Length: 507
Image 1 (cartoon, rainbow, N blue to C red):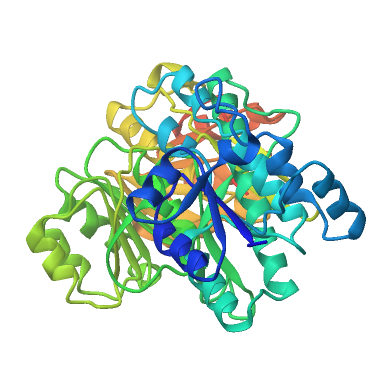
Image 2: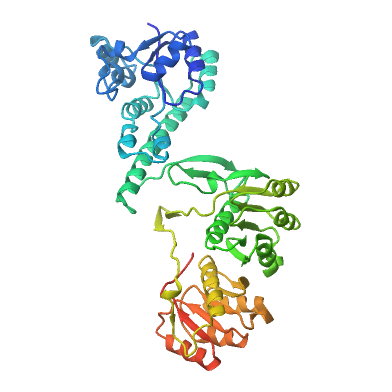
């Protein structure tokens, strides 16, 4: 009896060549629906699934392969008792299952899709066949990825069979395929129902590419995209340069997250996930010049993000020093031409207005999930707690500094003036230490500047230090049991201070 291959695919890439290759090897091809039509039109001899089951497709095609004649043929071991049972019921073994699933992802990402359309694109029979074949991998070859067709055919032609290790790898790919598919459906429904933290959760994604290494050369790493997360770095259009490294990706995410905070033309330069220079201006080239000048030493080899299309003048400036990555919503043709002269500069086009909904971080043995910190502070939410309220100019700078400090690793302090960061103290074990770093970096420029803190002052020492450098206004969450001491210290030096009531820890 001829060996039998069941082929039913949504993705038709390479399926004709695969089926014809199997036909040449003596396999009987069984198929259904659109795959059957595609193969017949290509001249392949195909048997309809309905002929195998002796039962027509019903319920608008919802039921066609869910039948013992199909699943018995897939799940049977090649042991005497299983084969005897198949013979008793007139069932033939199925030796190859090539199946991939209804285009659920493509459907739900389509604008205006209805719930009914989404539900109709949840595959039932496909996952059942794939999982059955993968479970019985010792006897059944399961193929879910068109890119695997060629190697399967080559081995069948060369050796007549696949070794167990290859079969097991294909089974792994099959279970991964159905697991990702189910996770995708679950994520879609969770989003539809507004369920942020379900009792059971799975994340579906696909590999973008393997990275040369991770954070350090001795660590392996890969870059993945979520199936239903929406736009983000995995979907950025790379217009120049080498593939992103692990550190490039992490830093680029930090850059995009910060630059999207601003309405005016803005530039952010990131090093090790912290902003070493952030500026807003009336035009992009001025924003870049200000951001770079904030800390030229740290900016070298940094990640640059813009919130406007990059023009030629800005590109000329960006191309002067060594930089790793530049990200923007787009590039004028001349600007792109200029940047491409630096062959190693990674140039990415990515809309910056899209933000992530959830953040996931792994820990040993599990992971934690939280909403992204998308809180936007409004001036009306601020409480002036000192004798002197901020001037309009100070208030503008305070709001700017607050947007930046939100994206600096805790403990975080930012000194700013005229839409420009002058000093950044990041990731320190105590708050006054972070303030000292930021103020020392700002130096003489701190006179008349403002200071932002991501969390409250546990002591008045940060205010004392700020006063020594000439800071005129401070923004912080408030909430310390010693708030009054800090307020009184501000009053002693004529510093205006406002409380936000919101903390922005970042670990």
